[in-house]
Amino acid sequence: MKLYYSNGACSLSPHIALREAGLPFDLVRASTKTHALDDGTDYYTINPKGSVPLLELDNGERLSEGPAIVQYIADLAPASKLAPPNGSFERARLQEWLNFITSELHKGYSPLFNPATPDAYKEIAAANLHKKYAYVDGKLAGRDYLMGDTFTVADGYLFTVTTWAGYVKLDLSAYKNVAAFMARVGARPHVQAALVAEGLKK
Image (cartoon, rainbow, N blue to C red; front, side, top):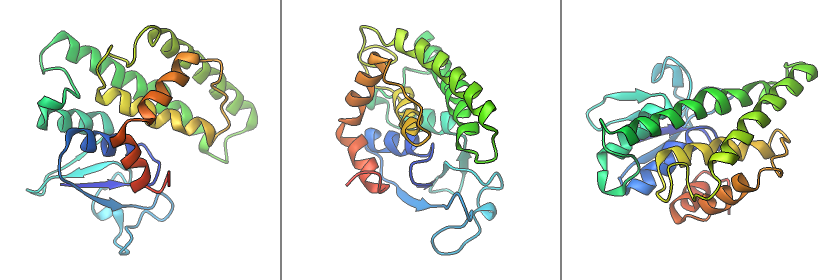
């Protein structure tokens, strides 16, 4: 398999999932600025959406959209327990978290990264993210991970988007459970390996 990624982008989430699942894969970097691979290939010829992540299977099939990719990865390695079984209520709960992260947090950061966003709107976007993180902080009370004691692909996704807070100067220090979660996930060996591979950590 190949994972098309950009350093520190949302593709870090399936990158973490692949390592946690113990699956073999190759990393192929796509620049978010030039939309080209390191060899000069136009990334739009591979993914017309132009975005990462993109998972390419050995048979040539390609899958885009992070929440779909991480669930596919989890199902390839059920022993890793990165996702509850399909059809179970707990799987629906995992999907609930993935949808919340992608729509409320992931997209919530977009205005803060865009230099064209007016400062007044950035304040609104930041305030909205604070409301969402307050909700997450409450849900993490008394538990190690979003689903309880077991690390899932939702945790890798939450970790990924929350690392962006430092880049956009979003102060999350008020959310102690989120901080503990970030430290806990960040210390996982496979997460550390993914960060190093993407040049995000020495």
